[in-house]
Amino acid sequence: EPEVTQTPSHQVTQMGQEVILRCVPISNHLYFYWYRQILGQKVEFLVSFYNNEISEKSEIFDDQFSVERPDGSNFTLKIRSTKLEDSAMYFCASSVWRGTEETQYFGPGTRLLVL
Amino acid sequence: AQKITQTQPGMFVQEKEAVTLDCTYDTSDPSYGLFWYKQPSSGEMIFLIYQGSYDQQNATEGRYSLNFQKARKSANLVISASQLGDSAMYFCAMREGSLQGAQKLVFGQGTRLTINP
Image (cartoon, rainbow over all chains, first blue to last red; front, side):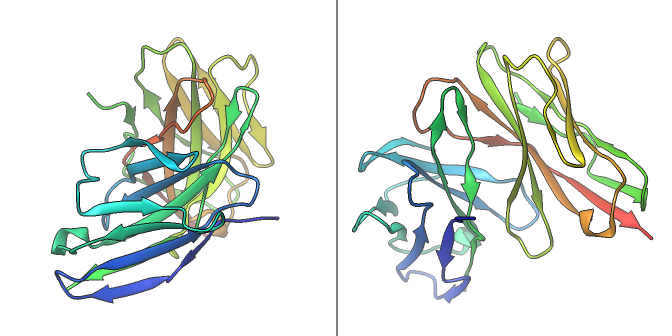
């Protein structure tokens, strides 16, 4: 069964450094998402992406964040200058609509630790 | 206001018993979708079950069923014959609208389910 993949599974970085989190969505899916989950908290929406542009972004998704689909298969989240509070699990998700139904399938996540 | 409320931070159940995880939601949109995801200790988010707001019947997927009570705005997950492997965090989530497009999910705080042998 096809699945969303994410790399790396874990990343440790120094505050102020740039990180790029990578995702390969399910191949026939058209809609892509990033969510994050701070340890012990609920999952929060960051950004959605369709047709090579951002559809919606949350207030968390400030100028330090950007997303890209550089080659038609990968979907990346870049954090330009990481802060301590960016430490979280980052999930990529992808979906396709079938009529009025859409299910988002999540990748295994990247656990980011900013020191 | 919270869009998704899960009032049970933790639940403990004996193996083989059925368990109900509560979820209430708040929306004024007549079209919405409700989801349950399982998050084991390894951290991944596993899709379990989906209920559309216009679905007449409660959704079922194997041992999982969704007790959808639209007037009460509740979408409780029922796991029958619980197994040790069901121990995990469970999240209820909602998507508002049914027009095709990239529409975010809003999650509840989650319920940590522990199955005792």
